[in-house]
Amino acid sequence: MRASPILTALASVLLAAAPPASAGDAAEAVAPASVRAVRLAGPLGRRHRANVDYLLHLCHTEGEAMVNAFRERGVRKQDRGWDGEYAGKWLDAAALTAANLRDAELTDRAHFMANALIEAQADDGYMGIEGPAKRGKAAWDVWNHWYAITGWLTHYETFGDAASLAAAKRAGRWLIKHYGPIDADHRRFFRGAWGGGCNVDVAGQLVRLYRHTGDDAFRAFAASAIAQYPPIQTMRETRRPPLTHAYVLSAYLGGVVELALSGGGHGDELPWVEAVWQRMRDEHLYPTGSLGLGERLREPPPAEEPDAKMQETCATVEWLLLSYRLYRATGHARYMHEIERTVYNALLAAQSADGMSWMYYTPLRYEKRWFSGPTRCCYWSGPRGIARLPMLVYATDADGVRVDLLETSTATLAVDGREVEIRQASDYPAAGRTTITLTPPEPMRLALKVRIPRHATQPTLTVNGKPADGPVKPGAYVNPVREWQAGDRVTIAFDMPARVVPMGENVCLARGPQFLAADARDNPDLDLAAVAVPESITLRTAEPAGDRPRYAVTLLARGEPRRVLLTPYADAGNDGARFTAVFGRGP
Ligand SMILES: [Zn+2]
Image (tube, rainbow, N blue to C red; front, side, top):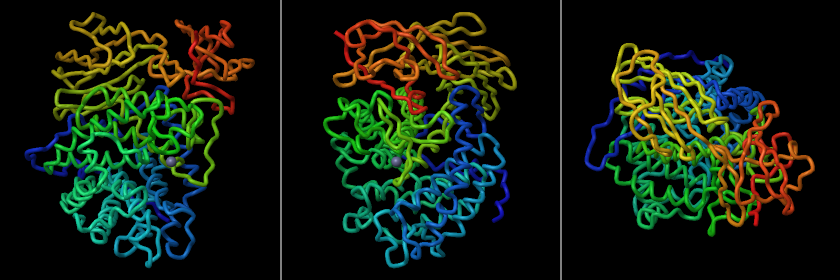
């Protein structure tokens, strides 16, 4: 099959008129950097580039099966009700990655997949995988539409492909026609899996369809689903998360944020979503930045069960997406702190160092078992998280530019209609230091807000080598507003002493954004189950093992002081070695 031509312009995206504001609206506080505008060249960039080979591998080995789920609907026996999710998830990750890295083969494959899905769409717009008798009655029918729409809209946003937008519209209209209206008497929509939550998950993509088409029917349908869904009605009052599926919950909460930002007077939905997010973070998040035991939130939270099936990769990625939506809505640093924690720990730990394997559940100790199915959701979710890394590093707001992740990189950001180049030379996370060089096209007054990590100590800021005025506080943005000349340099430096982080009866160890693990490759005769952390510890940088940083520390092994080498949790256990990121508490 022929790949569709690359339609250059993002003009249709850029020209989409902003909806008029009304009472109760929430404005987007922060705009993410365009995926084409950023080039990563640090440790996150290495993991991001590794995603290309993985996505190509998935396409070569699973591409036919991904599309055949639709081509052979009603004929073939589907393995799982959600077999329709894979193609859209793949297209979403592949389009973003191909657009960022200008990778010709992946670009070609993304166009191929978008077209193959368009050809497999039913004439009436149906984009599930069921035969005629079961359409609209199967538990995962809406879910499969959700991901087809997601993939097509990302393909449209990255490559301007109008055929993908048209296909997404047809799929959205099929949902509205089949399930609408949703009111107190018509709640058929909530008969899907996970108490209907799987169906409500599509709301965010319907709002995205509204943004691109201006057709209010999409937003109105999303709004009615959110207004009528019983668990959301409960959350508005209790401001507590229901003990349900972590991935599904994060996804429909993200849809509520999209609705709040859509300009339809739904801004008053934001405060309760923020409160629920805060409780998820305070009560359910693992130190490593993911959620869920056996895919679900539990009560009491599973902090004392380090050996459980925890941190489903789908939940990791959807938590990241929810946190980023709240960041866009509010601009609050707390969302970026959590994104940083999730990226450097749960997300990167779920991806093998070469990018070719993914975890389903990522344990905190002993053994990584790379995912081989049969429930294959996480294979396709993990790369969606990695594909977004370039967009997490920089953003723009009403005052200027923001530096959110301290990764060596370059970017071109639009500020007041002008293109500002920004360059970061960073030692992070190995050391707390980055130098940012700003190059506006002419001298320009703008704010450069740099997020100082929450865990930084003794942070300092210099502008062109001179200490800057004003406080530099961990966990906040520093904001040296001034008139910038081409080549102006800002350097942020701070210390990152070891931290002991409680986890139930046990503790975890962290340095900067990274949690640390003892890996059997570095400590061959250490009994990993019998290591405890004494009252005070000092980390010293040790000789790395290839790319893998290592730190030396004195811990207690069976009560006796013992030199132990630690390595980032995200790199531990990668080669099948046993490891632990959970330690006992010393006397
Ligand atoms: Zn999964």
